[in-house]
Length: 220
Ligand SMILES: [Zn+2]
Image (tube, rainbow, N blue to C red; front, side, top):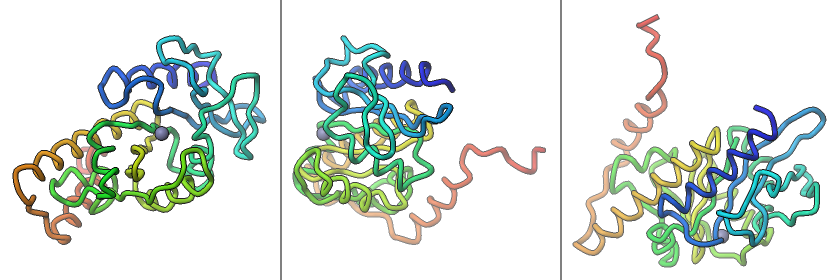
């Protein structure tokens, strides 16, 4: 996909994240990995611009060295976007939101445990919560990279969540899934003590998810 089409996808995903109710106002940010010609880096939403007013030209191109191209200032969270693209060859897009239920749990420093089998959609037996660090810092980025090790989503303590995908739309879908799980877990906590699935069952679900949606070789 060319860079212009990718810029438009980043804008559309940022707007969709607010429309889906998983982010409000100017919080959050979206990026997509971009390799075109000699450019090797990513495209990220700019700092402080309302999503409704944002155009493809406002999206900031950044190198993996952290250098911004053009006049717009990138999102203050560009560091964890850069570091995730450096550490995670599987990440093609990143959505960061302050989704209400995910952030509620993150403010309690609670990971999302295996209370529902869909927790495995993020790649493990739970969805970790990264320790708190000030927004925009290298320390926050380091915590996020560690919490996402082997996973496609994590919570950020006293802050929000991060979701990875192989395209902006799938990173958004992951963020919506995490917020849905966070809401269900929070509701279950209000009513009692959620019964967690055993580790062996989560291994079964993870193994099923590893092939879910893939073409069945027997049908070839
Ligand atoms: Zn944030």
